[in-house]
Image (cartoon, rainbow, N blue to C red):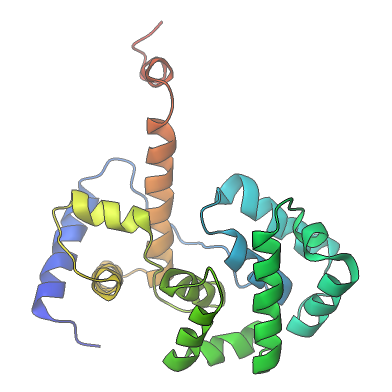
Length: 225
């Protein structure tokens, strides 16, 4: 894919900015590629607006360990019917469990049984857009689902938007942000999904640090004895 000159210029600006950041690390791992549709569907639905490290990841780990048989959409659907989505997810509210049920049922109707099936199905852009008919799923979640099954792209979130603004990069659309970040990954010679996760890790760590009381931050810096 040949990117417009403006996108190329903005990608170089982003790279220069990232290289100036203390503590920015290019990671070589991501969550996903579970070989377990129950885990993939659950991760896709739970991650939005939820703390991933402390809330989502432990639940995905538990689902894989407690229900190793739920590797296909159909066996996961049977599990949901047997013990209920709240029990599977260890979740109190109704919204996310209901969305897990809806997404599982949707994939069943599409004949998507495995992660390989899902990866191939997502190659068709019209299929990806059909995910938008499910409440709570828009472009970011659709792209995130793709990343979970091996797609090399990024899922544009608030962290990416903030990073580009800090770098002085103006953008007009989701796709432009996605193209800038994907091209930056290409120019850096790293996988696009890894670059996505690198940004998320850096911005999440920084946000967590900035949310601590000033006294705690100063103590860590050695200002308070």
